[in-house]
Length: 286
Ligand code: BTN
Image 1 (tube, rainbow, N blue to C red):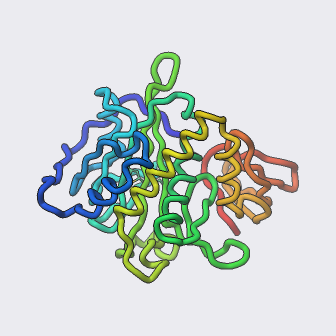
Image 2 (cartoon, rainbow, N blue to C red; image 1 turned 180 degrees about the vertical axis):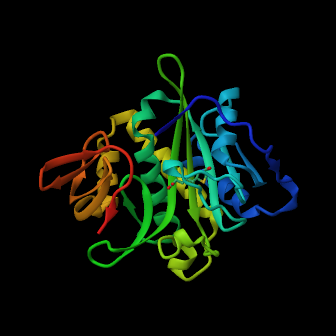
């Protein structure tokens, strides 16, 4: 999870007028699923264009907006990904969503919970058997050794810390709904739900299913601890065990075979020198 001190003040978002009907699909799906989502999406805002929904949520959290309030955008002009990357967010091509989490007991688990929720929500809404690639990329996989993989969604959790503890977390996720012109660096590595399925996908139904899954997994963690979450994550991520991987460590490329995740979410890798734990960054499947 990334730590932030103060939410950046960027271009003021333009709220979409509620009566223009542009996002009737989201309104309909959220209204129909309200009982299964707990606080997540009990209140929400839609913007036709925004800098970053994570920034909007960070500012709102700072003002005291309640846990579960959801920010949804049709496009982002400054969408952020992990490791300082840009999240390509063209108009009407994806779901760009952020929500606020305030229960501090969830803090250590929110990144894994977000990944499980997005993967399970996509599966439930579309039937597409997406997988997780450590730490939290949602991918479509073909090929027996996980070698053909297209990233369909990503999760970015950012926390604001007070003097002694985490005050709130913003959980953002981007889901590629439809195929658009991709920047060269993403060609061949990114995909979309509609591209995988070969049919139209209702973004509202996917969003409602993800929020329902987020409610379920976070309630499980609060009630019974992280064991069930870790088991679900492992089930969704077969490549976390027994796959050849490489990563950059201290300026050199390291290689090994994945050996599952630890209870803290670190990826275990068996190398020629012994067992390594990777706690952050990125691994590549070879
Ligand atoms: C990743 O790099 O895999 C994480 C991508 C997270 C993108 C989402 S889109 C909604 C929210 N707002 C942002 O600026 N980023 C996240």
